[in-house]
Amino acid sequence: MTAPPLPHAPPESVGLNSARLKRLSAFMARQVEEKKAPGVSMLIARNGKIGYRETIGALKPDGPPMREDAIFRIYSMTKPIVSVAAMMLVEEGRILLAEPVATYLPRFASMTVGVERGGTFERVPAARPISILDLMRHTSGLTYGFLGTSRVHRLTHDVNLLSQSRSLDEHLAELAEVPLLRQPGEAWEYGHSTDLLGRIVEIVEGKSLGRVLEERIFQPLGMVDTAFYTPREKLERRAEGFPTTQNEREHVDRVDATEPPLCEFGGTGLVSTIDDYACFCAMLIGGAAPLLSPRGFASMTVDQLGDAVISRSPLLEQGHGFGLGFAVRLGLRGAAFGGPGEFRWGGWAGTGFWVSPRDQMFAVFMVQAPAYIYYLREIFRNLAYAALD
Image (cartoon, rainbow, N blue to C red):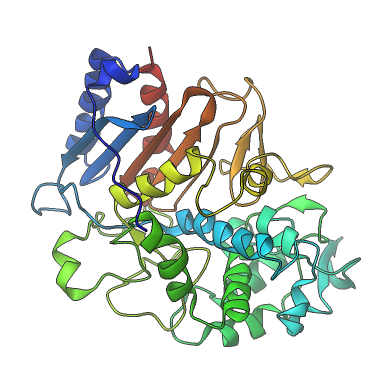
C-alpha cells in the first residue's frame, strides 16, 4: 500500500505566519538574484499538512523556471534512508547492531589505525572490530578523504570511493587496506560508514541496494522519483547547479547519475524530489510507521554516541549528538532555533531536512549549490522556524 500524499493547508491553519513566510521567500529570491544558486525549492509541513511550498528561480543556469517536480542530487541525504533500511533488518532479526562488520565484509576483520607522531606514521591494530552500530552512528573510524589533511585522509582520498570506474566490492577491498582515522567507538568521524552499511543491506537481502530501497521504502511511501539515477525520460526535470568555480569544493565528484550506476553508494548516491523526501519525512514524524516499530525508530533519533568524542565540524554543531543515521538536537544551546528531540541531516549540494516532533513540523530544502552548502541551508532553517506562531 502506498501512503497518501500530504494535503495542503493555509499557513495560519497550521500555525505558520504568512508575513514571515513571505520574508523567507523574498530572502531566497535575493540569493538567486545574487547567483548563489540557480533556484531553490522549499517545503514546510505542520500537523500533517503542507503549509508552505515555494519554488524560486531556475531549474538550471540559464534554464527554465524551477519546477515543483524538479529532481535533485541529494548526496548524503541518502544516508538516513539507508539507515532506516538497515534498522528494518535489525527489527526482523536479520542483522544485529553489535555484530562485527566483518561478518558480512570479511576484509574488514583485521583493521589498523593510523597514528602520526613527530613526523612519523605507523599503523596500530584496532582495539576491537567495527560493528554495524559503529557504521550507523559514524564511530567506525572511517573518514572521507576530503575532510582533512592527515596521512589517513590522504590515503582514503586516493581510494576515490565515489568513482564509478569499479564495482563497490573492488572499492571496499581497497578501502579495507587503508588504516582507520580513530579506534572504533572512540569518536564520531564522518565518512564512508554508510557505504559499508548499504553493502551489508545488499548482502543480507540478496538484491541491489536500489532494488531493496525501491521495494521496501520508496514504493510503500509513494516516492516515485527517488533512485540512484535519473532516467532519460525525466532528465528535463533535473536541477543543476552553476558550473564548478574556485569557490566550490572540488574534492567531491559532481555525480552525473544519468545512467544506472555501477556502484549504488549508500552514503551519497540518490536523486530525489522535494515531494518524495517530504513523504519520507512524513513517515519519520509519524514514528516511522509502517516501516519501523515505535521503539526501534526511537532508538534512531536519540543520541547514541555516549562517551565517544565528537570531531566538531559544521556537520555536527555544538548542542547536537548523533543517533542511528540522524544528527540529534540535545538541548536549547548551540543554535538560535529548534530544540530537544529535533533530528536532521543534509547533502553536499546544500539540500537538507529536519523533523521536530515537539513542533509537529518538518521542513525540506532542495538546491544545487555546493559553494553555499551551509549558508543557504541554515538561513532556510532560521527563517522557517521564525515563521512559527
